[in-house]
Length: 118
Image (tube, rainbow, N blue to C red; front, side):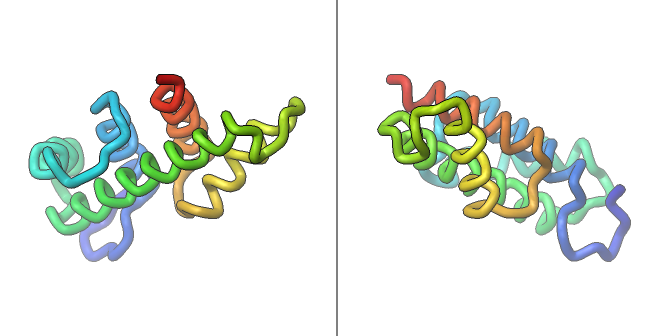
C-alpha cells in the first residue's frame, strides 16, 4: 500500500494507472488527456502526490506503447509461431517495461493484440 514519502508507485497505483491508460482504447502516442488521468488516479489514491500519480500514468503509457510495438512484432512472427510465442513476447514486454505485475503485462499484451489487429 502506498505510504506518504514513498518515491516509487506501489503495485496497486501502477495497476490502476495501467487500467486507466488501457481504458482509453488506443495506444497512447502523446500526453493528451494526461491531466484527467492523473486527477482520476489521485482521486483513487488520495495519499499519493500528483507527481507520483503522473509518474505512474507515464509508466503505464510507456507500457502500452511498448505493448503495441511488441504485439506488432509478435504478429510478424518475431517471437516464433509455436505455443510459447505469446509467453516469449510477454517476457520481452517485461524486459522493456519493468516493474509491473504479471496481470498488467497480460492486460497490456491483450490490448496490444487488439490495437495491432487493424
